[in-house]
Amino acid sequence: MGVEQRQRVAIVGGSMAGLFAAVFLRRRGFRVDVYERAPDLADRGAGIVTHDLLYDALRRAGVTLRPDMGIRSVGRMMLDAQGDVIGTYDMPQIMTSWGLIYRFLREQLPADCYHPGVSLGGIEAGRASATAVFDNGERVEADWVVAADGVQSTLRGLVAPEVGPMYCGYYIWRGLIDETRVPPAVLDELAGRLVFGMAPGGHWLGYLVAGPRDELVVGQRRYNWAWYRSGDESVLRELLTDASGRHHPAGIPHDRIRSELRDAMRAEAARLLSPQMQTVIGATPAPFLQPIYELGSERLVFGRVAVIGDAAFTARPHVGMGVSKAADDAATLAEALCAENPEAAVEAWETQRLGYGRAVLDWGRDLGSYIGPPPRDAAHRAKAEYYQRPEVLMSVTAASDPAPFLSS
Ligand SMILES: Cc1cc2nc3c(=O)[nH]c(=O)nc-3n(C[C@H](O)[C@H](O)[C@H](O)COP(=O)(O)OP(=O)(O)OC[C@H]3O[C@@H](n4cnc5c(N)ncnc54)[C@H](O)[C@@H]3O)c2cc1C
View 1 (cartoon, rainbow, N blue to C red):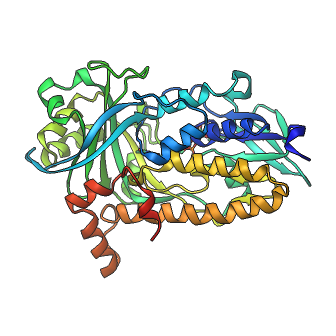
View 2 (view 1 turned 30 degrees about the horizontal axis):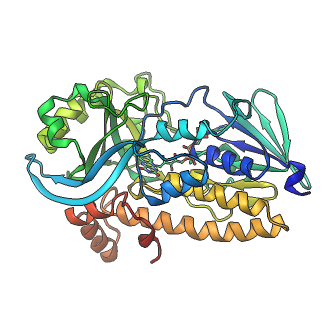
View 3 (view 1 turned 45 degrees about the vertical axis):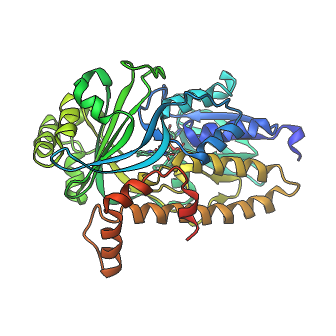
């Protein structure tokens, strides 16, 4: 069957990978529907560091790039625990936000092909199709079903139950606050750069991003920060347990985080972090927690199901490549599905994307080698010592050109 005959693709997950897949597939003539579990995804509130790979992906998806994709940063800066600058590194970049990219991509799609509040529960394989079964009882038979449902993917769990996310032995405390909450003198010191600070067990970083409705003007932006902290499985369990004793292994909702955990984090920040960062954390009403997981797949194609984005490979966030990798997965899959012999092309796609995914995963492990469990051996120790050197940390984290790091 040719694409002219409007093959149908059902996409599970309506975040970055799902949206890119929908846009690229529609442009190639597929009939596409996106099923997203969350009723409203519009503001997940994460900062995203941009680079050429991401811009290329957005351009290919038909997004008209504007000079104001986010907040300009001239480079990086490292503070010591006293708040003094111990290093700078020039690397002009735009700091954008998850929400801004989400809205750009949603604009490329007709509203009736995006179905929020619908959760996949099952999958049935046919000879030349697959049927996605949703928790609301809906059944959708499609020529292809794309799993774009993230690191905890339900669909991947059904077709490849042996693959699952691995906790990296560290987590982050995060916050995203109106810039007006930060005292002007502190904001002046932090604005205009991606700022890092070393701390025992992991660094912190922060940067300005657009406001909730993509505002870029001074006074309406937000400050995005994260503090990496080492903690084994038992620490994680404690952090993900709410006041009623309920454990939330897939991530604790922000309003269930126990207040004494936030108080303890603030007390440690006062002991370990620079005064500027203490001020930012103090100004954040409700810092939230995110465990750091990684995931690698051995296969990406299961009959008529293809797995992309974080559902396929989740690298540690230091690489800053999750969105561009999701876009590449989607663009190359759309190309393969249009080939004269899609089965063979999808097989070749799988081999290529497995190689790329492993390279990104390994790169994330290198960058995070000094956070989490103590070094296993001399090679790990050497790596950990190298990657926590301020000049290295500043130059490689979410680099403006990540491609060269993936070739080794
Ligand atoms: C702290 C942090 C900082 C980061 N910084 C950057 C950065 O600077 N640059 C960058 O490129 N990347 C960054 N990333 C990574 C990036 O956010 C992810 O790689 C990207 O969001 C992956 O997109 P995805 O669509 O594959 O998965 P997700 O964004 O996780 O989306 C999966 C979607 O599937 C939905 N879903 C789940 N289960 C079901 C179901 N059963 N049925 C229907 N829908 C379902 C979910 O609701 C969700 O919307 C960062 C990540 C973290 C944690």
